[in-house]
Amino acid sequence: MTVAVVTGAASGIGHALASQLAREGHLVHLADVTPTAELAAQLGGVPHQVDVADSQDMQRLADNAADAAIVCLNAGIVGPTTGAPWEAVPAEWDRVLRVNLGGVVNGLRAFVPGLLQYGHPAHLVITASLAGLLTFPGGGAYAASKHAVLAVAEQAALALADTNVTVTVLCPALVRTRMSEIGDDPAEVAADALAAARAGQFLVTPSGWEEAIQRRTDLLTTGGTPQMPRPTAEPDVTSAYDVPPTPGVRQMRLVVEAAEYDEALRFYRDVLGAPVELQIHGDQGEKVTILDAGRATLELSNPEQVAMIDRFEVGRRVAPHLRVAFEVDDVDEASARAKAAGATMIAEPTLTPWQSRNARLTAPAGLQLTLFEEPAAEPDGPKGANTTETPPG
Ligand SMILES: NC(=O)c1ccc[n+]([C@@H]2O[C@H](COP(=O)([O-])OP(=O)(O)OC[C@H]3O[C@@H](n4cnc5c(N)ncnc54)[C@H](O)[C@@H]3O)[C@@H](O)[C@H]2O)c1
Image (tube, rainbow, N blue to C red; front, side, top):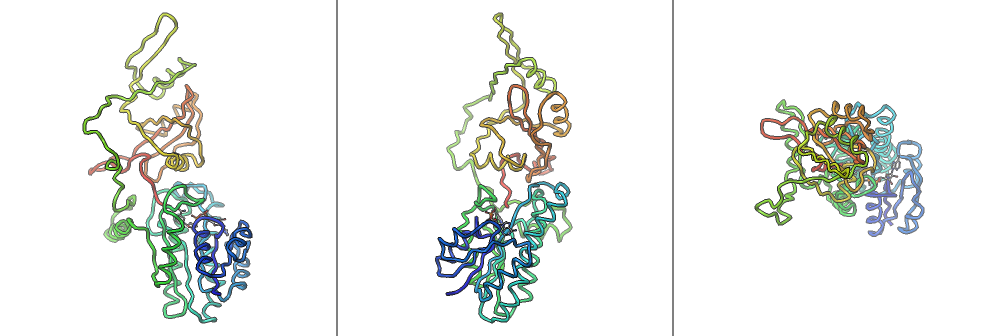
């Protein structure tokens, strides 16, 4: 029975790799920080509790599977920071690099000498990320760790050329795992990775991103400044629906019951700066003010999209069924004004992967607000559209 090893086997891509390898008849060593005994029993494999950041743990794993024909160095984590590099604290940098980069280096140190000595054909399958081939503005320490993993995989491929050991590096975009609620099916990602390994292919990239990778190289080598990577073809959402040629709706008005009416009026009119369009005070105590809040749009999102936006703006799931978003000129200044006027910050302004700056707060009349500032328009049009794009992982 041929032997396989998968790190990060308890979940997601690792689980899918282990499952396929077991189905194909391998004896799979399932390594993870979380227990894999139950999965090992299901797959007829061998459980190992391993922290890939610990070189001794990895050496023990390799000692138990020295005759492996396929070693998948896949375990990885994303830190809590999905912003600019300086926003992640040193401990986060340390942990992300120790797991993502250290885990791969420890795996190579533990397995490669034995695989070379043993001499039978063997494949190393290393999971990096599209975030290691392209640089997105968010991602904290994760992006750097994945660029480094790709470099290490390339070094390994160069050093192992003409030996019995091949190297394949996997660079998926978003994959539906514990790490991301949206994206590709992990079973398909695993199947592509194993097929590429057997074909001796080094790099596995997600389809639709090839031109973006090429563009990045062209841009950097011709002295350009970094730009937000975009896939070759943006999904054509409008063609998926039957859009009437003439809009049947002239205006969107959000009607909010405000028990503390005067407080709400002061906040939205005076603090946020929405001018009064119409005000009627009835003789039975009825009061209504219609504020001009700029252009109105209706953003329909499925739960996965709402969760993704929550993750980038706040870092956790907080949005209620209805959330109101106001575009402002200066989100830091508008948030400070809102806070001083009694709004409660849920998340301070943060740069989203599509380069708008967004803040989240609880405001009068019980509304959860996003204040957002779009990136400055470039001569050929706006650079990003708030909330409608999905950055890959
Ligand atoms: N999901 C995505 O969108 C995506 C995209 C590109 C790349 N990746 C990469 O794919 C790999 C697998 O991630 P996933 O998406 O399946 O996520 P996941 O969270 O579902 O699975 C990761 C597994 O790694 C394990 N793990 C974490 N730290 C570990 C450690 N120190 N030692 C041992 N095991 C550890 C976790 O317990 C978990 O079982 C990661 O390297 C990730 O960076 C994921």
